[in-house]
Amino acid sequence: MARGFTKSILSYLVAISIVVWILAPILLSLLSAFIRVEYYYGGSSIIPLSPQAYTLDNIRLLLILGAHSALIRSFQVGVIVVILSVILGIPAGYALGRFILRGGGTVKLIILSFRLIPVALITVPIAKLLLTVGLYDSVVGLALVHTALALPFVILITANIFASIPKDLEEAGLVFGMSRFQVLLRITAPLALPGITASALFAFLISWNEVFAASVLTLTERTLPAFVISALGGGTRGVAPDPFKFAAILFLVLPAILIMAYIRRYLIVMWGATR
Amino acid sequence: MVVNVTLDRVTKRFGSVVAVRDVSIRVGRGELVVILGPSGCGKTTTLRMIAGLERPDGGRIFFDDLDVTDVPANKRDVAMVFQSYAIWPHMTVYDNIALPLKLRKIREDEIKRRVREAAELLKIDHLLNRHPHQLSGGERQRVAVARAIAFSPKVLLMDEPLSNLDALLRLHARAEIKRLQRKLNMTTVYVTHDQIEAMVLADRIVVMNKGVVQQVGPPDEVYNKPANIFVAEFIGTPPMNLFKAKVEDEALVAGDLKLEIPEHSSKVFESLRGKTVVVGIRPEHIHLDEKLTDLDSVQLEGTIELVENLGSEEVVHVRVGDVLLKAKHPGRLATREGLVKMYINIRNLHVFDPEEGIRVM
Image 1: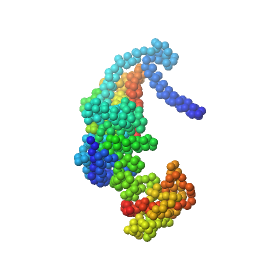
Image 2: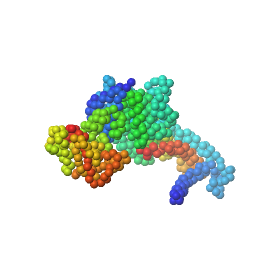
Image 3: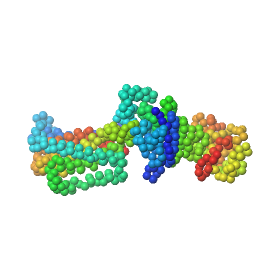
Image 4: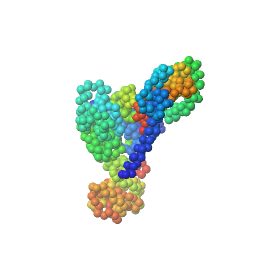
């Protein structure tokens, strides 16, 4: 009894330390996005207590510099990525998940192996390719490249989602009078939909967070991460005040956190842990 | 309207494996036929071919006179209770039962009536608004049966519907299925590996092994006159005692074990004289300590090795030379060890050909 109690106290302590270790820097940087530059550098404590120390000016400045249109562009790219990877990924995932394909395991491995090639290595050839077809420095061009990056994951995730739907449920549909199409519509789709939504959001996140290809493949049509890098990192040789950088982090991290919070419960199924 | 089902020399291969070979079965209108066999014997594949979920590679399937071999599952008007129940998890119990009827374009008030009727029959009318994940295993099983019954199919198919229930619930559900099938008079094909389930439920049993039908007959016939060694061993608990013996002039001999042939029945064994056979005797046909006065009965003596107490009866392991016999003894045996006398009525012996395994007597 006493031992179990000590044990549970210990495990709580470990859990709390891990949470603090991860959460504290994130919260601190999000908070710092709202601290006035003069308080940030002149203040005596990391977290100023006076209300005058907090402002929306950092975010306003970032928007003036062009974060606004970069944000919209990031969304545009992300939405195109989601649409393309879902349209292409669902049929492929269904075929793999339902074992319609012979040697499905090998196919999965080949699909995944495309992600073994570092993006940095193929970005320059891709840039050349996009220049030839006239898609360099465009939302569509970048979206195509991001789709290529996200698609393997979408295929593997949807394959696992379809594999996790018992075949019996579909066969019961057939026996009780449904055509194959009705089975897809009334049984398979509703059961797969939450997982597919999650995988689509995952594809969105991959595009949202991707910075290398975005920096190389665009000049003026920058997505948010590329914009942040060029405006606050490379562009200013790193001398931009920290609160501005934290404000940029806020822009980058907030959608990611919201999406992750939603797809959290599907992550386990998505990676096939339940099989 | 229910139909009779005929399978005519149906064969199914998966790659190079023959899962079902030349199976011919006839199920009469309102009859309950149980397909019984060990796992991998082809019984579920046979059922799935009747459902239309598998296409046979050879042979035809008929519902009455209609050849349905090429009719897809959704046009066959059969209902199936799956081993996993296959209740659709994203629908309420009501919708699970009602959806197949909606697809048939039945009037709304008629659907309501039939769902209610089936739900009352299976005592799940209080669960109609629940989702499957809120139900226990037994309740899910009832929903699956209700869905099948409300469909009023031409044929009702059941694939080990009780195997996921715990022992007590299974006994209860078994009786209930029998009662429902009688009441609704549905043509039913029921698949199981549980021989007791088959004995209790079936009008006729089809015993299958390795894709081949071994015997078809009413439970009594399959039990009392097994067509071959496989059926003899598969049905009955504990299984039938089987041992090789030589038919000599006045006895069946297996090492130290000598079963004298009473003069009265010596004619029966005449044709087998000099041959080696496999002799079978059911445990309940070996009587311990109670002398049979019948003309056909013979006496044996052996050593008790083990007594298994089953409460109402005991299973006694008795060794005679190289042969270990299991005898079922009602009540408690007086002697628990040492020598014991056994009495066997020679007419209760089953005799099989040792090579082919088929019954010769």
